[in-house]
Image 1 (cartoon, rainbow, N blue to C red):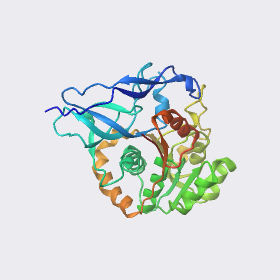
Image 2 (image 1 turned 30 degrees about the vertical axis):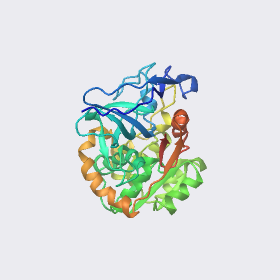
Image 3 (image 1 turned 90 degrees about the vertical axis):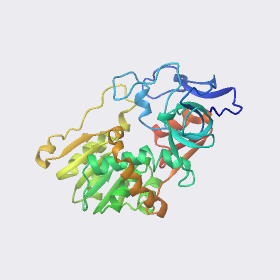
Image 4 (image 1 turned 180 degrees about the vertical axis):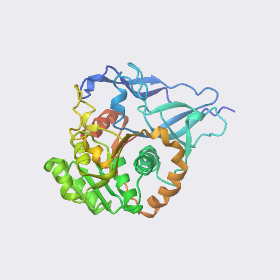
Length: 340
C-alpha cells in the first residue's frame, strides 16, 4: 500500500552548471528549485536531514576518466545523505524510518529501496552514519588494516590527520597497538586536537616548515605505515622516512585536486627499492565486505568514548557549496556535515 502524506511542491537542490578549472567558483554551480515527485513502486521519498561533502566530489566535477562517473552538467549532484522517509511505495520501508543513501545535495530525494540502508537514530546520532560509522570510517578501517597491512608495533604516519578519515586512522592504529602514531595538520589548533584528544604521540603543523624535516623529528626511527590523504611533499617525506618493508596506502591527494597542470611526483621513489617499500592506492567501494566487521569493532569504541570524533556542521542547504569549498580549504575539523 502506498503511504503518501501531503508533500512539499518543490525541493531546493544544487546543480553543476559548468566544469571547474582549478578552484571551483560559485558560478560553476546553480542553486535551483525542482518539483518533488511521488515515489514509484519500489521507491521512497526521503526528506534529507544531513548531507555529506567530501574531497572526492571535486574529481566528479571534472569529465576526466576516473573510477566513478562525473557529475552531469545541468543536473543535481550526488553525495552521501541521511534522512527520514516521508512517503513510501516500497516493502520494508515505512514513513518515519531513517535511511542512509547517496542522493545528497538536495532537500528531498526519491530513492529506490535497494539503494536505501535503514539506520537507527537511537543507536547513534544520525550524522555519524555519514562519518565515523559510515563511509569515511570504513575508509580509515580498510585502508589501514587491509591496504596498509597494519600490524601491532608499527609506527604510523597520517597526513590530513584532523580530517574525518585521518583522525580515525590514527586512533584505530593506537587502539590496535601501534608503537607510535604521528599526524600532520594545517593549524596549531588541529595539532593540539591530535595530541590532546585523539591520543596521537606526535603531530606537527605542515605550514611550520618542510614536512620531511618535521616528520624526521617526530619519527626519528622511521615509519612503517603512511596513510596518505594529501600527496605532494607529504608523500615524498613519507618515502624518505619509510622503514624496510614499509607500506603506503594512498587514500587521497587533496593537495593536487585543483591543480591545472600535472603535479610532479616524488623525487625519491628509488628509495622504495632499498626499503622494499610498497605503495598501493585503494577505494572504499572495493572493501564493503568489511562493513559488518568494521561496525562490530568500531561502534563499541565510539560508544565508550575510546574513539573520539569531531564534526564541523554547516546549517542550511543554501550553504552546501560553501561547506564543500571549506573541505578543500581544510576549514573542517573531522567530518564536514550540512544540516538541513
